[in-house]
Length: 455
Image 1 (tube, rainbow, N blue to C red):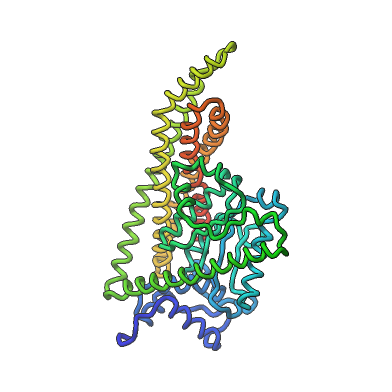
Image 2: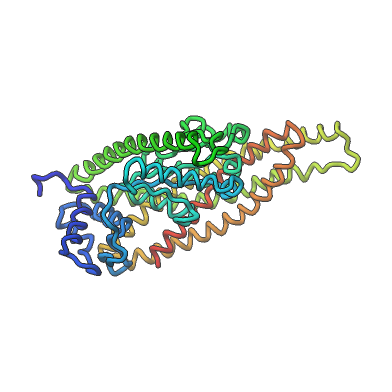
């Protein structure tokens, strides 16, 4: 085998698919272990693990923790298709309701135009109302299935930009695509004019992202048109053109990424030990970062209390006139300066730490999968159970903070309208708290993935 090119995980996956198609392995058969496949092909266990994950995502095999990987049954086996690509549709449910189902109609029109144009049905547009539990499975789909082109399409409206859940999805998607190096992965659509809503984000990386990212299409005026109008159909066709062009560019990035990955895998015989060491470094860092997250949660709780005190320590007198109100607003704004700055720093650190822990969680579960296939499953299961308890405790602690955050955000919304001197600090506080709130969706993903692994 040394005279041949180093195989990629897709080489292994396609070889197993061929064995299934030819009948060399039957439905329900147990595949060789990761160690056995790795030894047969002369590759690392992690590459075999990627191949099996890919096959499971495609529906060809199923893995039972502690028992192995088995060929899927005929009723769940996928029919052969061309290389699929996926779009994850991120929107505010209220916008779809208020537009009379306009966002759903747009998704359906894109799907129909693509199939009409190409004759293929290999485009999946995942909308949470019909396909998956939103905010959890899409992260697994993007992270775990590199052979499938993926885009995240936020449908921008003022409601979307004011929804903590929607912004959490967007922030999390940005982190996923940044780690994967997919520059074209985020594809916003302007559905309603958001210029005023975006002003609230001028000091935030979300504003920079949306300001710098070219819209895949501007649909603001077309939403008034019926799907049968020529203007609507032309805009949908333009959108499909741009998505297909982005897909081609993204596939080239994926091919280059896979080439670099393969070179790294084959650079020397001892690569696997190096890779394992890299995983351990990331895992060790994650354990420290989890502790730091707990400390930052406490600090942010103290910041919230200081901000609440800045308002409560300056009660409005019963006979207050406009001049008194202006002076009172100025006094509150001055007292907000220090805790506001502290909160911005702590929430920014918290957000960065969440991204780092998310990477460490990936490393931990990858390492656990390799360890289990190598006969160390019992020990790793105990460690995973301990990690699950730690994450659950941190989630519970963070949930308490989320309650404080919701109350404070409602309070400052009212105060920000009273005086211009309060508008800026209240906006800064709201943006900082929004960063922390966006971690909720990541916590849900951690708990789900740990539950699946621990069983």
